[in-house]
Amino acid sequence: MKIIKVLALVSLVLVGLGALAWSNRFAILSFIAQSRLPDVAPNRPVTWLEGPADPPPARRQPNVILILVDDMGFNDLTLNGGVAGGVVPTPNMDSLGREGVIFENGYAGNATCAPSRASLMTGRYATRFGFEFTPAPVAFQRMVGTEAEPGSIVKPRFFGDRVKDVPPMEALAVPASEIMVPELLQKQGYHTLHFGKWHLGAKPGARPEDRGFDESLGFMAGASLFLPVNDKTVVNAKQPWDPIDRFLWPNLPYMVQFNGSEMFAPKGYMTDYLTDEAVKAIRANRNRPFFMYFSPNAIHTPLQATREDYDALPQIQDHRLRVYAAMVRNLDRNVGKLLETLRREGLEKDTLIIFSSDNGGAGYIGLEDINKPLRGWKSTFFEGGIRTPFYMKWPGGMPSGQRFAAPVTHVDIFSTIAGAAGAPLPADREIDGVNLLPYVTGAKDGRPHQVLFWRSGQYKAVRDGDWKLQSNEARSKVWLHNLAVDPYEKTDLSAQEPERVKAMLALLAQQDARSVKPLWPSLLQGPVFIDHPSGRPQKAGDEYILWDN
Image 1 (cartoon, rainbow, N blue to C red):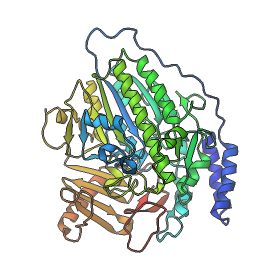
Image 2 (cartoon, rainbow, N blue to C red; image 1 turned 90 degrees about the vertical axis):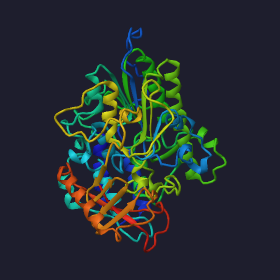
Image 3 (tube, one colour; image 1 turned 180 degrees about the vertical axis):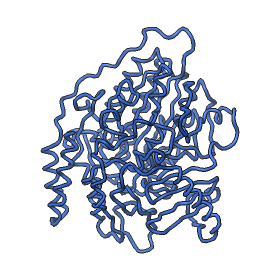
Image 4 (cartoon, helix red, strand yellow; image 1 turned 120 degrees about the vertical axis):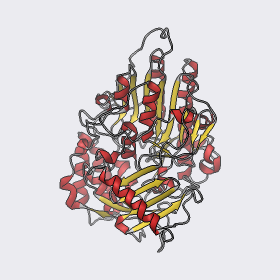
C-alpha cells in the first residue's frame, strides 16, 4: 500500500510540475520517490517446506517447471542468432529446445506482460474475463501518455477523463472466478511454488499465495530493481528519451516478499537470488511432485547487469547493448543452475520444462536487432511483439530434437500442464488452449489451432491459418500478411485481398462478441514505430501502430 500511495503522490506532483523542463521535473520526482519509497527490511533467510524424506515407492506424476522470462527478444538466444551478433552464448536456454521441442511459431498471449501472463495462467484469452490492459499506476500512464520522445512526429494521448473509472492499483487483478494452473495442480497433490514477477493482482485474494501457490517469493508489480542503483557491483544503462525508463528508476524498490510477508531485500542480484532460492526449493521437494513457476524479471527494464557479467563482454562497445547482453548472459547461467539441480537430484527425466517469454523484445530500450529477423516490438502484434522463444522438454514423456511448425500460444500451457499432471480441465467454462503433448508425441496430427486472436482495446489481430491481419481502428488501418511466404511481414496485401480482409475482420468481430468489457478503461494511447526502436529519428512515412493501455 505504501508503494501505491507514493505513486499517487507522484501523479499529483506530475500535474503540478507541468511547466518545468523534463530534466528538472524528474530530478524533483526522483527525490520525492526515493524519500518516500516503502521501508524494506534487511535480507532474511527463507525456509522452504520439506517434502517426504524418501522417494515414492511407485512412479509419480511429473514435476513441472514453467520458466517465463520477461521481454526477451526473439534474437536473444544463440539458437535464433544471438544478442550482439551471437557473442553471448546461451547454451542452457538453447538446450531446452535442442533436447526437447522447438515451437517455431510459438506466440505470446498478448504483446504486453500482464494480459499475456493472465492467458497463460488460465488457459483462456484474457479478454474473456476483462484483463485486457497491463495494470499500471495512473502516474505512469499519465507520463507515458503525455510525454513524447524528442522529435516525435506522432504524439501520445492520455485520457484523463477516464481516471475516475479506474479502480485502485492494487485492485487491478485477474477475477477470483478464474481458475489458475496452481489451483488445478494443488488438487492433484502437487506442491506449488512461485518465484519472481506476478503482476496479476496485489490485493488480498489476488496474490500468488491466494491463487494456488503454497509458497511464493517475489514481487507483485510489473518490474523491480535488480540491485540498488548505487550498489558497487551493478552497472546501469538508462534511456533518457523513454518516459517508461524515467519513471522506473526513481519509483522501483529493491525488494521481495515471501507469502505476503513484509518487504525485505534480496541477497545480491535479483535473478541470481531467485535462482538460488529456487534451487533450494527443488531440493526440498525432490521426493514429491511439484509445480514451479519461475518468473524472473530479466530482461525487463531497468537495464542493470552485474559488474562481473558486464566485464566479461569487453568486445561489445555500445554500453547499453553490453548491459543488456550481460543480463542475457546472467539469465542463461541461472537457467543452467536449475537444469543442473534437476540432474543432480535425479529429477531430469521426470520433469516437464516449458520455456517462453511473456512477449517480444521492447523497442523502447533503443536496441536495433533484438527481435531480428522479425518485424516489430513489444506492444505491437507484428511478429516481433508476440512471437517468442517457446520450448518444451520432458525426457521421460516426449521425444527430443523436434521442430513443430504449427502455431501454438500461451493459452496452450494451461491445458498442456493439466494433461501432463492428469488433471481434468474445468468443465464450466470455455478453455481456449489445447494440450500440446499429443501433438509432440505423435498421438495427434495437424494443427492445434486454425485461428488465434489478440486484442488491446481498439488494436486487434487474428491469425487464420497462414494469414495474419492486424486492425488498428484508431488509425483506420489494417495490415494483411501471408506468413507462409512472407514470415517477416514485409508486404502488406490488404489492398490486393479485400475479400480476405473482410472475412478476417468478421472473425475479429465474432471474437469481440465472445469477449467482455475490460475491467478498467485504457488511459493512454501511444505510437510504437515498427521498423526502428525508440531513440531513433522519426520521419514521415514511418510505419507505426497506436497501442492502448
